[in-house]
Image (cartoon, rainbow, N blue to C red):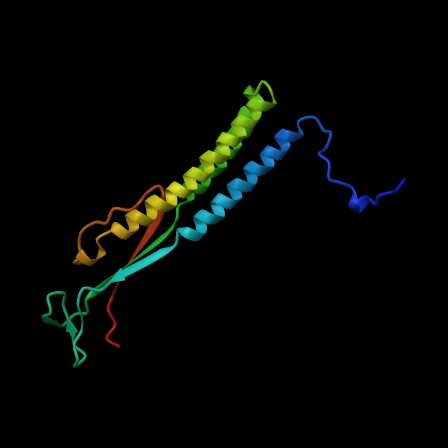
Amino acid sequence: MSQTSRSEAPLQASSLPGVEIIARVRRLLVVALAAAAGYSIFMTSNKGHCPGGVAADGSFVGASGNATDTAPTCVTLSLQPSALVFVAIAVIAFAAITLVLRRAADIPSALRYLDRAAAAIAILAVTSVVISQIWFVMIPITDWDGTGTFFYPFPFGSVDLTTEPMSAG
């Protein structure tokens, strides 16, 4: 008879009742954290536009190409994650755990609640990134003349607008 050391023994699942549910809750939390991290990483974009420019002699030129005494106003848009998406991820995770505690009649139904919540979180994060990035690209920043309104991808993303005069040098 050979003896196996403890480090060589195969990993066995715990005999704790409901271990499948605990493992699925852990998976839900990992999916939520990964979705939040991925959403944060892919939700950063910038773009800017300055209607006009600087002539060879150092004077300013307006958007129409005519010389002007004042510096053209430049606009910069910065896309950032929305706090509402992070709140929605947390609400989905806590709601799923609450539903398991209140309504699950057996282990398979508890696992379905947790799996659906994990899928909803992943779909929310991916959808928010796609909608925000497409919407952000479609903002007509080159048509900006210093007036008007930009429509942002709220609640999927947050956009900061910065205007400043163009520098001559």
